[in-house]
Image 1 (cartoon, helix red, strand yellow):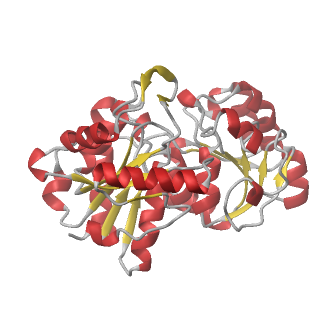
Image 2: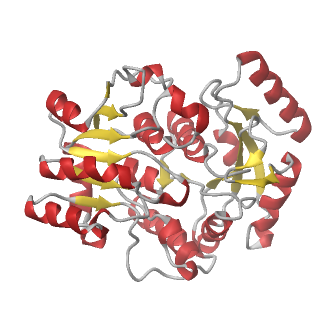
Image 3: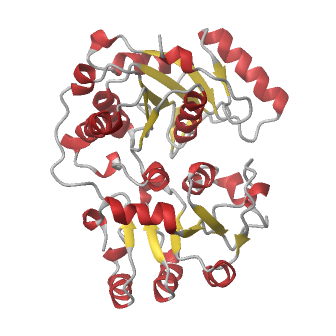
Length: 368
């Protein structure tokens, strides 16, 4: 059972009744992050924000023994060397693929472990572009052992085209996180902003637009897997559906890609046009000097990034503004990070911080 065959009850099964192992082979440990800091971003997002039980992380190259040694979170979650070891010690029944490589292809070196999982009473949550069932042996094993695979990137059928209906029908704040580059911290910013608003008593709604947030929330549409004509319409549909379902006070739309990235700009633009945001929050990583995967392109100047995103919003009479800047200062010392924050505040005259290291509540910016 995969893709569109999944109904809400089946997805809820993963969120509420499962013991989940996060598979981040070769990507989770601190040593691996020195080379590819964002490769384990799916694992990081799920570990920080998912509300279901996570029993462990699997990475044979990770030197650290617990998740708290890698991420600044208080949860006590072990790191295992193998799927077999993790299964034996935790009795977990679900394996979540926790990496986000460029292009989203399922690495061939993962197949042996996924096969073992399917043979040993473990279901799969897959966020790669490559379907688990596209491998005949994996599909056969899944069917033989009555296992389930949730392909989180598979979009629903019959998506609409966008028509600025969010602008017409939603009279509440719609906050979209946007980035100077891809894999820069937009999901983290989205969840931290929503958490602040919740503490103030507002009813918030996360709009999951990529595989990580879908894995956290248990629903959503991966915009980068939709056909081009329907990408913006998928965003629009999710917002309008949630208005009918629970009419939140504030919508927080998870950003994807970047207008400055040659590969992922289409997804970013679809999110802007589909969500018709009332406010934008720009996410930066100051230590990054070149666009990820494209060293030909330097990171945009901050004021240029602000201007470009504001001009991309339609309808133009929405007059949407970037109202705050979130920095991802992971790896920087406290003094250097604080100096950069103050410098950007002076450059832009906008509220600026790293929401993980120095949280601020910007909710009232969105209610104006």
